[in-house]
Structure formats: structure tokens, C-alpha cells
Length: 353
Image 1: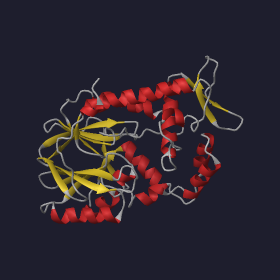
Image 2: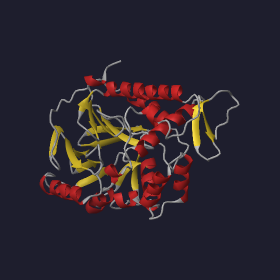
Image 3: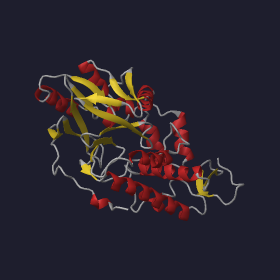
Image 4: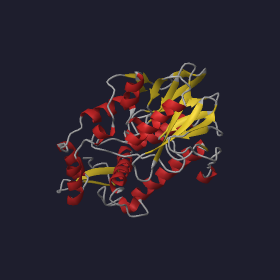
């Protein structure tokens, strides 16, 4: 297995805020600031067509990013319009300005069905009061009273605020679809786990993969369980989808949504598998007696998680527990306190709650 540090960054540079950096003929990199601690920036891409431009991902809904886009529209497009917006998935840093861009250029939004429907659902469901099913989910996974207070106080309108607007219609992308852009073909590869139907774009002639959040160079994509799908097994979906990328060449140039453009796809695929298997092994050893999603955090993470990280950590811990429930290695039980606990299944008689 190759080591992660064998990844290389052949461009040796990155664009400044709102700057457009040429990667190869017809492919350009834009980097925008986002208000997510630890990520800080998102990479967006411009693909030149004969009669216009395709944008891949819109960026977060912020006045700063809008103004940076306006500068690009005014100074870089060489008089050609934006004719297509592709969003890799529904997360706000990727789709937050989809409504603004599609309205401005009078174009449809292009993305997979699962991502559009999930994003539209969360946008339309936004409300000031946290819904009962969300409260019940976090109670079942063992949130403390201070944590529950934060859940209730923050409401349920994050996606509503994070999107400029949510287009009512869209153009669907499916696995294996081929888009012709600038006389070059981009094939759709749909990844799963991080998001329901995450679109990646592979160009064989240019030897490029636009990977979004599905493949990243310095971090693993977040794989978590959330209230909308409380019994989901996203880690299995993510590990299964790794095989969709195995046929791509070693020297492929990967254009990720975060960090830098890199070469080393297979290093990362191998790392993801080993990373998650190591986490699963930790849980197998730690959960000989049932534990809650909060109690397993020290077993999964080598550092103490802060207030901003603990929610993500619990969601990832649940994803690993649900993977082991799916393989029948773990049972999920409910104690008298109504909290879910996960532990090694001792016999076939163990019940899954």
C-alpha cells in the first residue's frame, strides 16, 4: 500500500481570493473563503465551452463571495456568458449561491437527483424552532442537557439561511452521463457516503478528476449520521464507492473542493480504507460492553473534541457503529434512559433496537 505522504502538488501554487488560476487548457481554479473553521476555503472550477462557461460549485451564500464572483464575471469571462452551473452536492459551501448564479444568468441548475431533493428539502423545512424529531434524535444518542440546549437554541434554519435561494427545477446528472464541454468529454462518477449522490467529473483526455468532497488530499471526507436518516449506514456506502475510482490512472490530476490540486488518488483511496478500518478495530476492542455515541469518542479520536467539533465527531462515531451493526458485529440497544448504546453482539439472540 502506498503511503499518504507520496501525494504531490504539481501546481506548486494556489489562487488568491477570487483569483482565477489556469490548470490546463479550458480548466480554471477559483478559491473562495468560507466561514467553516478548519476548512476556511472552497475550491470552485470554471470550464470553458465554445459559447460560454460551466461553473462547478457555487460557493457559500455570502456577500464576500458574491462580490468576488462579480469581479470574475466582469473581468475574466472574455465576453461569454455562464451557461451551466454544476453542483457536486447539496452542502452549503457547494450550493449556497446556486440560486443566485442561476437567476443571474437565467440558466438551470445541474446536479444529481438525490442531492437536489435533499438540499431542497432542508431548505424548505427551515424553521426557527427545532423540530421534535431532531430533538428526539439527539436525546436518543445521549446528548447532555447543555448540548440539548444548544440544539434547541439554534433552531433548524441553517440551510435556509445558508442558501441564497433554492432552484425549483434542475437538470439531472446520473452515473455514467457524459457532458461535452469545450469539445472535451466529462464523465459523471457518483460517489456516496459523504452525501447521497455526490457528482464527480472525470475527463480522460485531460487526465483530470473534479472530485468535490469525495476525494480530498489532506483530510478524510466527513461521514456522519444525522436526524433526517437516523439509521443510515453511510460508511458502508462510502467504502463501497471507493471502487468506482480504482480504474482511474495513478497520475491523474485531482481537483478537490478543499486544500490543493494534487496527484495521488490511489494513495488517498487506500488511506481512506485503512483509516476507517483502524477506527472500526478501535470500536470492536472498546465496545465489549455497550457504549453511547458520546462514550466512544475517546476511543475514536486521539484528542479531546471542542464544542465546535463534538457534533461532527459524534456523527462520525455513529457512522462507524452503524457499519458494525450492518455487519451483525454490533447490536444497538436502548437502556432505561432511552439512549442508544452500541456493543459487540454476544450471541444471535442480541436484539437491534
